[in-house]
Image (cartoon, rainbow, N blue to C red; front, side, top):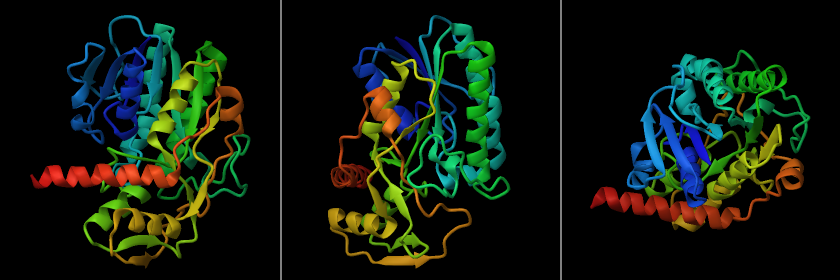
Length: 314
């Protein structure tokens, strides 16, 4: 297939580009590099099956040739990124999603929306099934991301229902792994960065709030399975193994060999206290199930961060 990946230079997008090319697909990566890094994809520059277009989804997408799939990842995803650029984030979820949907329809390509577990907000149902409508504060600070994705889901559904578009919606839960920026504010990368630099590990709240962490290699295999299917979704993708934030911090300290201490800070407004996916649909409809344990995934991620620190020092 020939596949367009928006946001393909980002953490998740670059791993997806790797996987698509490994499966002998041709990839066009469209990224404005506002949160993605060129270094994430520089190893693909010599591949005849890869090309980068530096552009924004806020402009109409016009790329020559046949496309079989469009995977829409473009959006700030870390709290620090979307809180710094709230209007840009909302526009990316709305205008940007429409521009990419229009392109997919024009090319008769299957369109996959990367939505998020954030559409569930502070969930009142646990674990979260796709039938759950969520509990989101539409005027809270995180709403710029939550509501952008909820609108993107509604828009994608409307294009499927009223335009006959071939669409699929994925709700992605906490994902981690190599290439995640150390300063992006997400739990694993933040803890590893702090541990390797002998700084206190910042735990918000009392640390009993939970996250379900999925290693990036597993996650991108789920995206590819969705692309290869005819499922409309929404379908949750994530690892249902649930850990408290303190447990994650302690695991990072153990695997990094750090002597840093854990430091408690006030919980930010609307930060979810529980998060765990029900992945029954992904198992039944996509044949997908995460394979990498949290211990193994964090060990791989620590190893990558250590190598990055060594590269910077050399």
